[in-house]
Length: 126
Figure 1: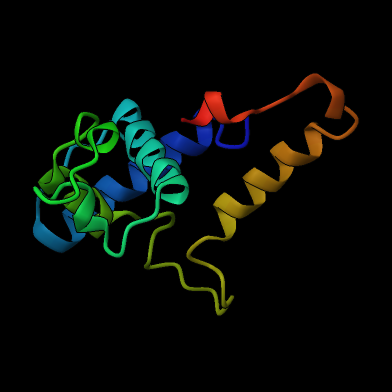
Figure 2: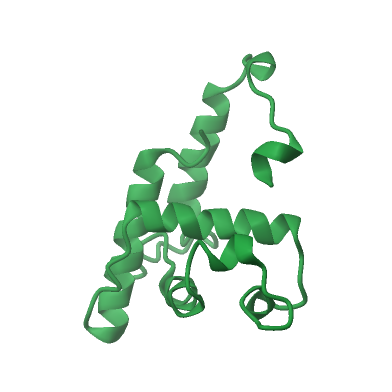
């Protein structure tokens, strides 16, 4: 709903573009993998640990995260995650996230008046 397909596509494209800018090659992120990355962040918000590394550690290993994505791939995506072409700084303090914020805001506005149609409980997130 909030992260529509076009938003995910934009993030994936910008992340791959940024990885090419930084290293000369793409990390080859795809939409489904970004959705997994996003799911991991939702889980991390619900089950908090001192460090993101703890979810993959032998001591605290959390299978709901480790079964989604290996640590090295998570770190790679995290390192190159990008929302906009960095070459187009227009002086806006939030230019790096503005396009995504605006699209999410528009998606939220489309949901106005539909409050009774959606319900999320713990079982859907866990």
